[in-house]
Image (tube, rainbow, N blue to C red):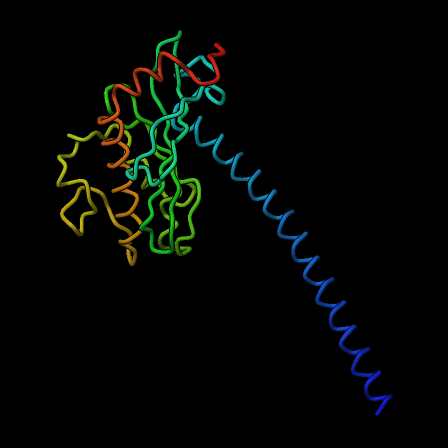
Length: 216
């Protein structure tokens, strides 16, 4: 009986040590992976900024000329948001806002929306999502040019009721076998335009007072 008790204790200790080592390894891996993912996301975001408003269209430091704007559910955030301001010879030519579409097929779709001072879309890029490969992932520019159709749009182009996918009477194409994803992105871009219209005074103040200064 004593030998059996010893064997059980040794087994329990062994299992405990195994669990501790395994848990520690998983925790370290998660930390390292999370940091790498965050770095990759930051690089992708920086690339997207210059795709939306290319260097030829501004001469300030777009990455550091940022402004903090009020939180608004339309942008998919309950916290104040940071936007990037593009300026040409000191005058604002556009702002790029981070927007989250909460109603994607597989969860949040994060995108950047560039809008000029007149309320016209300068460009849209999806920066992260978990949509179905081969279907919903066509919101990515590297998978299709669908997202380019937003460029030049405004709240009056098309009229509000036409800000939807074709299946629902709108002007934007849906994907074969996938309607939820493009519909979520269309709605998010429209909400960004509404946000800019309703926060014009905040934007005017932000354009005059950049958060980190202008580096032309």
